[in-house]
Image 1 (cartoon, one colour):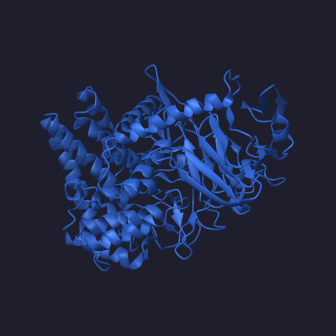
Image 2: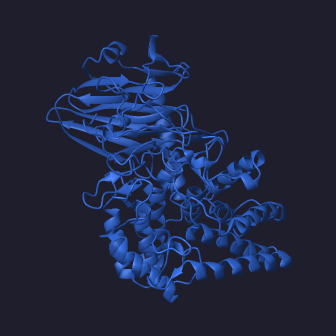
Image 3: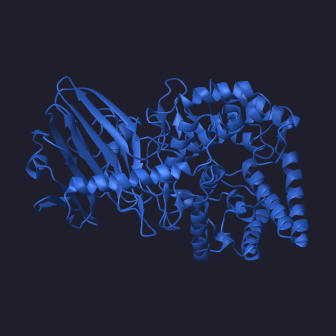
Length: 596
């Protein structure tokens, strides 16, 4: 395990659990029994105690170089430890495969370790934690497994390696392949390596088939495929929830206290994820997410919708700290829960309508009761109308103030605009006229109150004088055509005031924690799209190429980037950021006809 944690991490998962693997091949983050569970592997956030707590490391004596990569078009990671006399390969994955008409996604991590060259000597250190770093699970042994018992969680590690060597952390010769299977407290009858290889093959075939079904662009294929797989791994398939990220409390900037738990479902972020996957033809995520929304709506009327829910649809997400975890590089606090559940964020009604709109147009999707679905969306539209022009916490979730945010207002307009268009499609003339009146009134008010003539740009808040990168979405949301001089002026102003090289700040004014010092990754992709939309295509492609170079070694991105050092900060992997890769690639790519 690396002495100084960084975000040069790989992600494995299966839409039930996920784990992060550092560039030495150590598992440093992973929650059981689901994506928002207790971090059994918590080393990324520095649990109090001796080094190595909260990690699952496999090291080889005499290692001179470590290489790491994904198996092509999969969520399977290989880490190669190379030395002068020996080489070891570690293959990590979470099983995901279809069998007898059902998708299997057990809460299981499989590590297959095999000698490639020579007679390597390896050392295995398995040091899980419990209670967010506060506890060390009790361990008991059977013939081929170690059983871990924490306060609210029991699980088992089964192996065909030496339990004594593993428990006592003693080096041993790797004479042949061995496997480690961490999962539910159930015995595995087969040889662990036979079992592991069987599930590896099924999992590899699943991901390769899923990728073949994507409608990827001609250019930037590798980047788009990795982004799409990563977005899929950030979904909790059991309920349909889409997580903003897989971690908690990675600071947005060093020692900034901007440490938040992102293992929840934000309605806004989910729309962007669903939209990106829809563009690639992966519409199942949208269908599952709408199931999540429907079940959430059953529990809470639309008037009480929150900006964020737990991945089971939990409404209450009180924010507490985990004192037994020191935080990323010791930069606490580590937070569990997110107080944003209590905020007012009025863009959410438009976000849900936009997420559902494709159901009325896409002939590939199962036929549904369009009138009933439309009636449900209309109730959301009514709340968009009611809340329009009302102060809220905005898209960046300000904790100490509320304003009438332009983005929230435009999203409410977008919801009403799409309702008018959908009404026309299903032949409801009365509803079309009604929603068009609402949308037109909103449009006029945004033009009047969010335009700042002195700056020559749309601003963050009604009557305000500060810029916000979310205004770059005005053309993409179809609020204004990209040829409109006001949108062009906004792009120009944001480029001058918020841009730092190819990176972009979301805003430069002070918020509850001071002036931001790191750039917000997705905003740079919004800027690329806006450049392309206004005709600055060559510049957009140049910017996009530089942004792809900002990804870590595995092709992933976090929430934030340091504009000086280029270091990744913020929760990881951030779905917003991976969405940015997909949307920009689709906009900038040549057609297949041009390529082939």
